[in-house]
Length: 191
Image (spheres, rainbow, N blue to C red):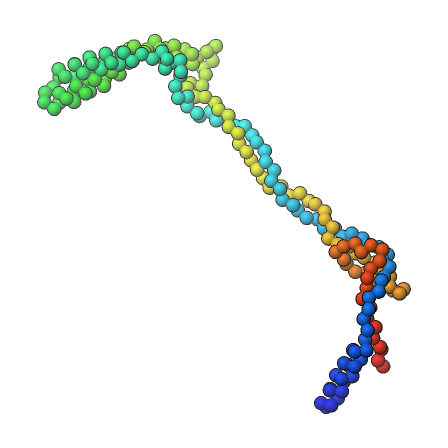
């Protein structure tokens, strides 16, 4: 049994040694491009302007120019003197401090009441009440999103070719042109 296996292996090796391989040229009949659809991502951005109505006006510049501080100073002095007359001991110090604060506030209100009326009248113009100390500001908002574009790409070529009267088809990455190199193996037929 071992002799039969060894003999058949030896015979196969001898027949394989007799096979010959060479390169020849085949005629290309057609090369049809093969396509695939690919989704290619890209960013698409747009800008929008939005209104922000809740931005507080810090102060009216005209109102700051007209503001007088003499009333607050005189009111604070008068309130301090009056507060010092009330109470005794440590209560006298607290009453003096309270008198200064309340007097300054009262004096400021009295002196600047006309400026407040003028400012309030400017808030109500032409029969319409404006935004009452708030301004509307615009801010640019940029929004981006990913969009997929479909693109068609060539993946290769389906090539049909003739070699010695036989028709063959294969797939190749590049277009071979008018002729195609082929590897031919010739081996004897055993009977």
